[in-house]
Image 1 (cartoon, rainbow, N blue to C red):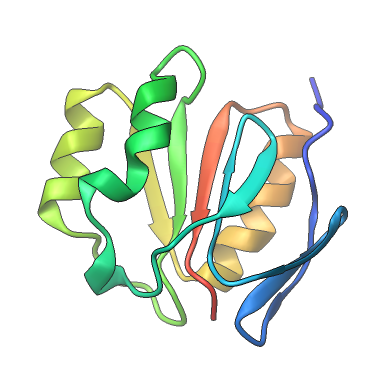
Image 2 (spheres, rainbow, N blue to C red):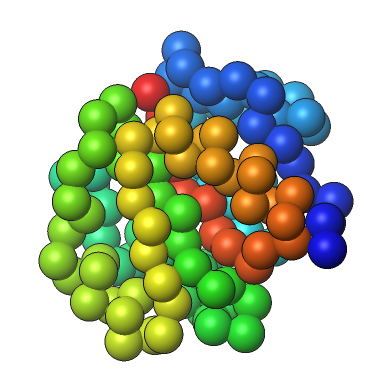
Length: 119
């Protein structure tokens, strides 16, 4: 079932254009609410970066869709292990692919959090 999630219409130039307006910088979408996310690179990603997602828990978040930046790379081990212990899945890919996939998955009604590093 589809929700009233914001759609990602464009990405690049250090931010995102959502159906709800332009968002500068990295982006966290949780409970269909886009918010600023202070992570500027994969090297800055820590379990604390996903504290809101972890607090929401498995009941609200099936998995995290992580856009890791301009090129795909493995997220830090501590982040992978923390999500696994919380029972929350992790899908990671370059931010462009993650932004496109986010629109498809929300249209399908999937319960996910999108954590997208701006490119």
